[in-house]
Length: 419
Image (cartoon, rainbow, N blue to C red; front, side, top):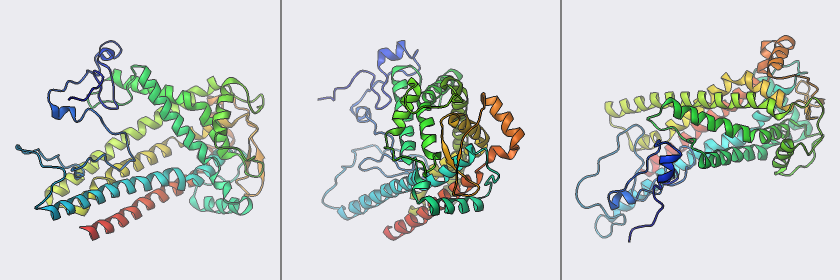
């Protein structure tokens, strides 16, 4: 009995046959399945943690950049062999499980560093960016570490971890909005290898609409991360959602007349988001290409150990993501400073004094828009005013690189002991 499925179903990338012909203009043609073996692959697993692989029973993680082995003709091997050769099968299964565990652990360590361990750097970085009073720009890691210690001493550890829940909410809203928009519109969520300018434009339009939907929640999350813990109320984790919705409908916490309307924040928000996505995507592809060639040449020149093959299956992708995020953050740091100042204006937010570490300051800017903000910063604070708090970025990515390297050493040792 064949499994029942909707016509044109292709795993998570579902596009109905009729919908392909009408809504998509044939850009995503329905796939036909000619044999029973093809039917076994019409369901795909959801995206997992970066660095991990969706391995099924009996599959081995191939070396990064190495071609997939061809399937020999003849009867397929049983996934659960019994009798003779059981010892080799158990050993192979153990190696596969360890390899999969290694990929999952490496990806989890990367996610933990990006979203949890580096959050104090994000907090201080944003506080420095919106503090137009500051005389110390904190361009180096040394002054950033000093001010972090002062905040922790005067306000406690919560001063460096505030707003972390709201950042996860913003990520969830962004992913959810992108999925819903791509489901109900012909805009592609991913770009195929055989791309064309129209497909690229539609994909970037999807990203732009996603950033517009998440914009009020991003603004509420920004306020939570820069608001001083001294005058901060004990808000719930869903306060970000409440404030974001209130910002859209014009209700909630009262704001001053200097508050910029949301429609004036659309262009800088979408511009920053789209540029960040484009730069990170290009750099990620470029780094992956370099690592792929390097790995392939090393495999051709000399035989690679099983340990190195397992590591090559996971780390290139993580290194590419790391390099892409670092380069895009550095390149767009001035634009991010302008964006945060526009979002925070008129919200009656009280921030910490990043010069002293034990006082609070109000935000009383009166920017009329993006152009006025850029000109004002250039005239009153100089070109380095766009890079206030840049030392926190150095600490953030140094910490991330260190965690990746330590994780690689740990799993390399574990794999060597198991092989």
